[in-house]
Image (cartoon, rainbow, N blue to C red; front, side, top):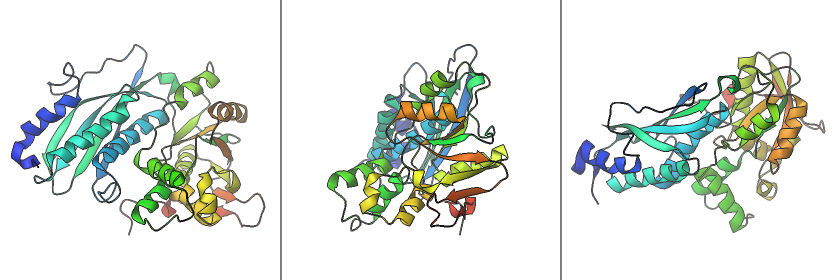
Length: 334
C-alpha cells in the first residue's frame, strides 16, 4: 500500500485534483459565480480522528459522506443552496493514500446528489488525521434563515426523527445491543449514523409556503449537535423560551421495542448528528410545512416568553424538565 509520505504533498494533490473540475482549480482561490441579488453563504466544519470518526465505526467513504453532509446541512439551515466546498486535510505521513482517496470518494458521492463540487483545499502534515471542510452556498438576502427571529407563539417544527444516528452509533460500538431489532431496523439506524441526509429538500418547500411574506417569518438551525442544543441555541439567540412536548418528538419506530422511553428521549434530545432542521414559524404555516413534508416531520412545541426551555409531559406523569446546554456534547468538557 502506498503511503502519503511516499508521494508527498504534490503527488497527493495530483490524485485529489481528479475529484475537482479542472476549469476551477489551479489558482490561489476558487472563484464562484453567483446570480445577481444573492448572498454568498460560507460555513466550515472541522472533524478529528477519534473525536468525530474512527475506523471502528466509520469507513473512509462514510467519514467523507458525513463530513460533506454536515456542511450541506449548515447551508440548508441558512436557507441556502450549495455551490461548492473546499477541503483542508491534516494527515500523518504514514497514512495509506487509498484511505484518503476513499474519503474523497465518500464526499463526492454525497455532493453529487446536490450538484455540488469540490473546488480546492489544502494538505498539511499532522500527527492526527484532521478534516476541515468549508462549504459555499447562495441565498436570496431576504430569505436567509437565522437563529434570532423566533417569536412568542411560533410553532417549533422538526423535519424528521431524532435519535437514529446515536442509536446507530451505539449498535456499531456495541454489536451485542439491539437483540430485539430486525436486521432491517439495525441497518436503518446504522445508515442514519454513517450516511445522514442533509435536508436541502426542505428549503424550496419553505419558500413555496412563506413567499411572498417579507421578511420571512421563520427562524431555525440544524440539529447536528442535538435537538435540545438546537432549540436552546434558537431561544438564546431570540431572547425567548419554549415548551417542548415529550410525546410529540419523533423517534425511530424501532426504539419502541429496544429502548426504554427515557432512554429514547435522551437519544433524541442529546444524541446529535441527525442533521434534521429545527424551524420556528407561525402555526398555520407550520401545519402546512408538516403536511407537505409528511413522514416524520412534526410540530413538537411552542415558543414562549421568558428564557426557560421546558420538556413537558402531556400526561403529567413526569414533572417538567428544564433543558440546558450543559447536558449536551461539549468539545472541551470533562
